[in-house]
Length: 119
Image 1 (cartoon, rainbow, N blue to C red):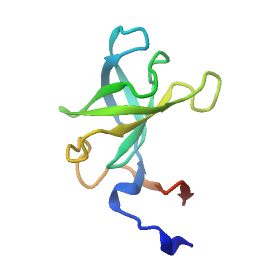
Image 2: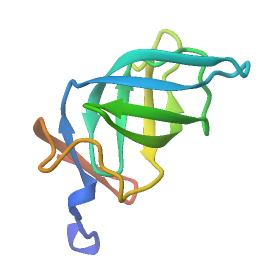
Image 3: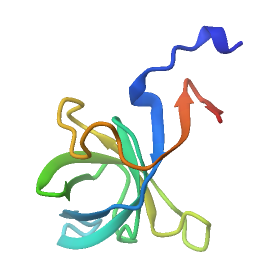
Image 4: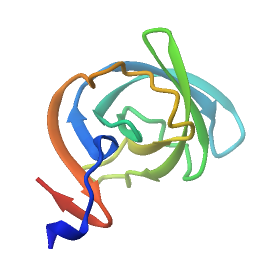
């Protein structure tokens, strides 16, 4: 049933460990700024490693890489003790503002399309 789904370049994820600076507010309203790394990236978002444990879903973060900045919304955060602990899934708020360059760095990983993961 793959014919039902349309794969666009923005669906492709790349495995890339890139150093980024993040800043925003935590669940207590305190401002933070720290370094972190990406786990994987796409044109629509990224998975962050080293995310503060005190950020919550729907929080807006600014991510900076190589002098470029963009705002992202936290879609999910890893649970304490899980494999995704200190990770967060971020969605790019302005798709026209790409901070990674083109083509995306890193190796092709996978894509996500309408609730199904494909390799």
